Image 1 (cartoon, rainbow, N blue to C red):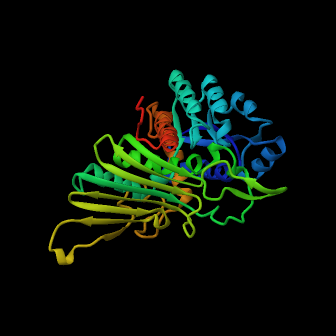
Image 2: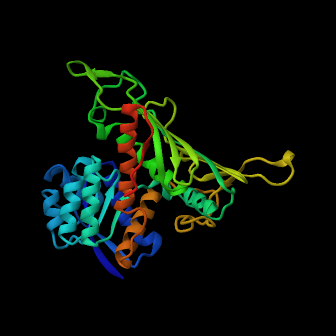
Image 3: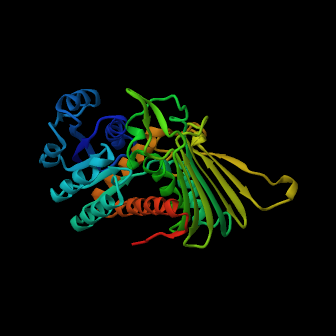
Length: 371
């Protein structure tokens, strides 16, 4: 067993999830590399010290620069705001350290391109955090599609819908300012990563991106909302198949509506993250009177499930997705081989988002650059 010193930048919501994951991953998956929670950095030294005590890190850093430079930090996990991702990643690669970065890759397409260039020039392992596609259920769907279980694909419908800003009386926050913090910057990367995994590259798209609540209560009266609340995209995949994606942070009643439906010539598949331990599979076979969607509960027969639980139908949860990500990052470091999704896969997501804004601005279909 070989220890590896983990440096974590950011201790908030996702920082905690990664700290827990790296504490647990070796026990869950018996990984050859054993993470050591070495150093954590946050927005201030005092904040970092608080997270150190809470999460069990050996030390707290005064800032991310000190963390990246520390010789006991052998891999860097970025869980800070997206506006900081590029600088941290570039510094880590320059210091010879593998990087795991939370989505989205950067605050802009330019950031994403620069981060890919730095990663590939370094030759070091790199991954981006798209955790939802790593549920045993969605991994199983990827297997079904690879085996042609529903025949030739004919249609895709995806969504990521939540309601944390559905109430127009909620006050303005950092989430309601800046394009990178809008729905397309915050929620859309996850389902876009998903549709790329399930359906392959997007050749062209059209889009409508809108702000539903133009103002929100502020400290000095109504405050303008200068980013998007929801969007819909029509897609043409490189395969020729058509599809649709809807993303919203104002979808009243939806809490984690990361969902998709795929139609094929021999069947169909449905999945909804609010029921993340089930896949609904329809097979166009047998008597018409007995056909229907079958609800398949995940269990040890499905990818990565058995490492967490031996009981079918008992289920896995959100934190387990992050542990699977940690396992994959450690595998990339130990093997020296890329593990999907790499920074380049994150760039593919950024390209689609950037293209969607252009399409929404002029109302036209736009080709999506592939390189």
